[in-house]
Structure formats: C-alpha cells, structure tokens
Image (tube, rainbow, N blue to C red; front, top):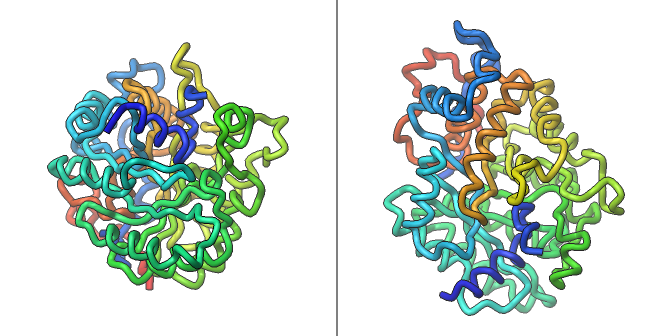
Amino acid sequence: MTSSSILTFSALSYGSPVLCFLGKGTPFIRTPSRSFLSQKMNTPLFQNVGVDDETLVQEELLRVNGEIIDTHLHTAPWFDSAGPLIEELEASNVSIGLLYNPYPKVTLPYDVNSFIHNIASRSEGKIFMLASLNTTHDNWAEHRDEEMERLRTFLEKKETLGCKLAPPHTCLPLTGPVIDDVVDTVAQSSKKLLAMHIGTTPFCGPLGKQFGVDCRCSEEYVNPSMLIPKIEQYPGVKFCLLHSGHEFLPADSPDYYNFRMTDECIRMAKTYPNVYLSISAIFAHNKEDATLKYPGGEDMCRKMKQADICHKVFWGSDASYFRGQIRPVLVEGIKAMINTGWTPEERSWTLNGCAKAVFGFPEKTSVFEESNLEGKQECLELK
C-alpha cells in the first residue's frame, strides 16, 4: 500500500482532531466500586504535581503493573504493519493499543477492515481492532446485506473487540435504519460493544471545506441523547461514547454547543450501566509548538470527577497520526486527572482496568485483580 493511499484514508475517513495538521467483550463485566476507587492511598493525592514528566509516567506505570492501554489509535502514513506502531507505543510507555477506522465516503484501493486486521493479527497480542462498515451509501437498502455481512465477519475475528462508527465524518444520523441495523447486528454478535465518535469534528469547519470533506455536526449527528432508545433497548450492548462530546470547533462556529454534549454524555454514563466515556483527543497537541489544540479537556475531567463517574471512563490518545505525539497526550491526561482530584486508583482504572473490563483486553496483569479487591468490586450485569 502506498503512503498516499494511507494519507487519503487517514485524512478523510474519520477526521480525528489530530488530523487538523492535514489541512471479547462479554455481557457481564466486573468493575471496582466507586467507593473503592475513591479511597486515597497513604501518600498525598497531589503527590505528582511539580515532578518531571518521566517521574509522573513512571509512578502511574507502577500502579498498573507497567501496562497502560491506548484505546484510540488510527492508521497513519508512517506505518502499514504492526512493527512500527508497536515501537511507537513502547516508546510512549503504552503496552497495548486499539486500532480502528470507519469507512470514508471515498474510493479506496483496499478494504479498511482487512487492512487493520492485517496489522492486528501480526502484532502478537499488542494491537487489537474495532470493526466497521461503509454507512455512506446513498441507497442503504441496496447495500445493507453486503455491509451487515462485512460487519458480522470481522466482529468474529479474535483480534476484534467491537464495532466503531464515526457519525459526523460519515454523515450518519444517530437515529434511523442504518443505526438500527448496526446496533442489532452488534447485539447478535459475540462482541457486544459499539464505540462511536460523539462530539463535533474540525472537519465541519474550514478544514473540511479546504479538503473537500463532507462532515456533519448538527445535532442529529452529535447529540448522544438520540442514542438513548437504543441504549435502553439493548442493555447487553456496551455503548462507548468516544471523546465524551468534546468541542473540536471554535466558539464562533454555528456547530459549537458550549460543551452541552459533554454534559449529556456524563449524565448518560451516570444513568445507564452500559454507557462508558473516553478521555481521548481532548489533550491533542499542536505539532509546531506543543501547545494544546482544544480548550476544555481539564474541565471535562473535573466534571467527570464531580459527577462521580471516574469508574466509567477509559483513556485513549487519538494521537497516532504523527510519531511522538502519544506520550505527550498521555502526560497531559495524567496531569489533568491529578489537577482535578482523581485519586491514584481512579487514574489507574482509567489507564488500564476500565479498558480491560469494557473492551475485554486479555487479562495479562492488572492492579484490579479480584484477589486484590477483597470483595470491594461492584458487578454491573448487562442483561
């Protein structure tokens, strides 16, 4: 595969905020109780404030037995095999990664799922994937059977942990026949997890016009409350609201919601046992000067803490497009959690335990082994 093919795919397929420069799961999961995660360690809560980045990361690694999981990776021009990506993850103090891309509304010389599966299946358990499908057809009824079979096939691959959709980037409304078909297919599979980009995208602004990308950020594509009927209809499906409704457009944009979607995501995570949130892309860096691209990331972490839903949150970088960006995003995320009062246990759960409980990553080593919790876990049965 050529670099230009991957470049087109990465730029147009999902529109991650990082790309602004291109201008087994099971129905039963076990998680620590909120009361357990709220307990403080013997050391002061803000012990890491003021220390250097290396010390900061190493202290977190000690608490997760050296295993941080990045639940948000996308393809990029610099890799088309597992080796380079694994090296980048290891250099970023990340042990396991989750790789995915939706199908863009452009013609590609390869199949998206096959390309990602080729990487994951050759990673020796370091990289897993989410399957997707092409929802951009003008006549869905004509292509429905083909796309459902595509999704069903890849959901049953051992490297696949669930399904990924990106409604704003693929012009997919959060209600309607396509979503109905996808959720039903996921519910009937052995990987009952649906991860969705929730929130705006910079490609709804001038960037999209610059590159001729048709993205939609009106409410029917970004408001998570529209998923509530499905969340209630399928309590056995885990709904992962990626980015947690963050704002990726400036305040003067017609599609700016002043973090209303974030507030709704938090409310839904607190209300529904099968809804989970992510801290991903919200600490993206400008490559030129290492400043943060988007405001509000720390405020989001504060809202999560105040709402007492830290046990429903997992971390992801969404920073794989450029080499060297994953670790700075990790460091910023750790600092934000510390600054907003997350306990060491809550941070460890977000960096490791929640990803394992929700996505079903293999249980290699975890600070939240049952023997260590001494009955202090709460069981969330998703029927």
